Length: 380
Ligand SMILES: NC(=O)c1ccc[n+]([C@@H]2O[C@H](COP(=O)([O-])OP(=O)(O)OC[C@H]3O[C@@H](n4cnc5c(N)ncnc54)[C@H](OP(=O)(O)O)[C@@H]3O)[C@@H](O)[C@H]2O)c1
Image (cartoon, rainbow, N blue to C red; front, side, top):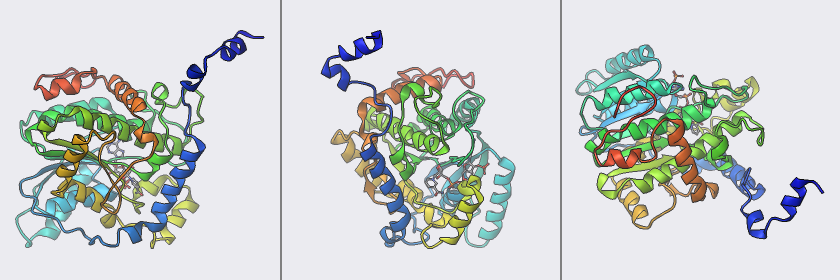
């Protein structure tokens, strides 16, 4: 008998039960895909009570930061928030494109009210240095931040596995690691703007995701990489991290953390799909939201006055996951795996390690202390 067989047969039932989970169980996987197809088929029916565009309360007192606002859902979100009176900061990697958009929106808005209060700042989520530098520049203004919308995201469908300059799998970096670093480093400004909100544009695809905190880059070989694995895992990791952040931020900070699913939306996210899938995307417009419809959940989560009450109720109930809003702007529950608190804690720790923050960074920032980050070479 080999050593390996001997040791496995001598394991106690409890040890066997504790064996590391290496993928989603098939029941969870089936449930996950039925949620995905359910959203595609029924989103128009479940969201039929929503106006398009969504009507917004007055927003003149708000400063809102929207990442990835040069295209799709983020572009509509930024424009509508600005037209509602908010001071909007477009945090984008292509500032030239953003400036041109701002000019065009100002021209189209002219005569309807005061000029839009909107500006662009450079942020490249594929570089954690860029994220830390952005947060430092923003915090140096010493102004309040009321709403941070982590909207930017990628789904490099069908592409080979790629890594950022920081060495992380690109979906994990753009969709989870970089927005997490941004949220933590901007806490001083969010606390200054309290009551304030961190809104994470997530996806129903999180429900087919699985995160191994020891293999966030999907390189160990225990799971085969595909863009679906990369995307869905990054979205699940974002919910898990947000759930621990939700727990760690005391009620008194007034900073709520919300994840949402915008629905299936016709945007540039489909630009990397194979040709035939892009064609399919375009010929089934009945099922798919326009960007104006797809941004309603972000706008609702950013501005609805009931959101802080909902967040407070969940906090008082010691709810294991952060608030999650579905594409019909109703609270819902993320997947079963998202409720795995043991993994969520490990994802929290691993994420802080990968983005170069200490484990007590949030506690320190809440106390008003500065923290060191391995990236950006500045204290926050
Ligand atoms: N569309 C859907 O059906 C759907 C469904 C569920 C969830 N979502 C989520 O919704 C969010 C918005 O996506 P979308 O559908 O509106 O897609 P999109 O049209 O492709 O917009 C994505 C935005 O993210 C920006 N971005 C990408 N990589 C970036 C980086 N490294 N640094 C900074 N910005 C970066 C893009 O900037 P550039 O213009 O410079 O490329 C763009 O402005 C994403 O988080 C996505 O996962 C979308």
